[in-house]
Amino acid sequence: MKTLRVYLDTSVIGGCCDAEFSRWSLALLRDIRLGMLIPVVSDITESELVDAPPDVQAVYDELEGCAFEKIEETSESIGLAERYIAEEGISRRSSVRMPDMLPWQAFMKSMSS
Image 1 (cartoon, helix red, strand yellow):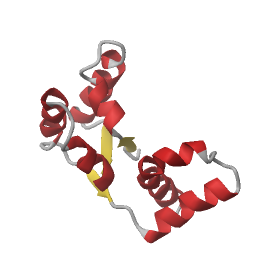
Image 2: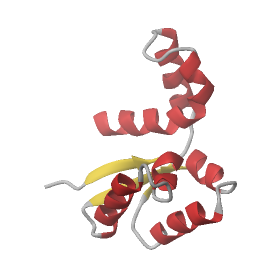
Image 3: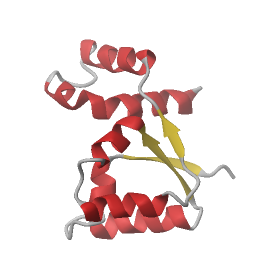
Image 4: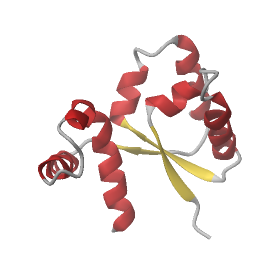
């Protein structure tokens, strides 16, 4: 059976340090450490973590020992996000956070190929 790949953004990593979300984020990271899931992290997420609080950075640093996949923003992922906006798959308002969407869209496209 193929191991499931899961995209981690800063909210998932930061959720480990937030009482409201830690239950789910920590369970997800536990499954990653056990090798049940392959984490996928974008270059955008990594750049956001540079300005994250130290406890959030520490959570990400712990993942460095796990085998994870990195994806990068590309002209193709930007074009796909722009098409979603044009076809109203996501709203203009959502496009404010479009940089967060780009790696996810590239990841989803790679899963369908």
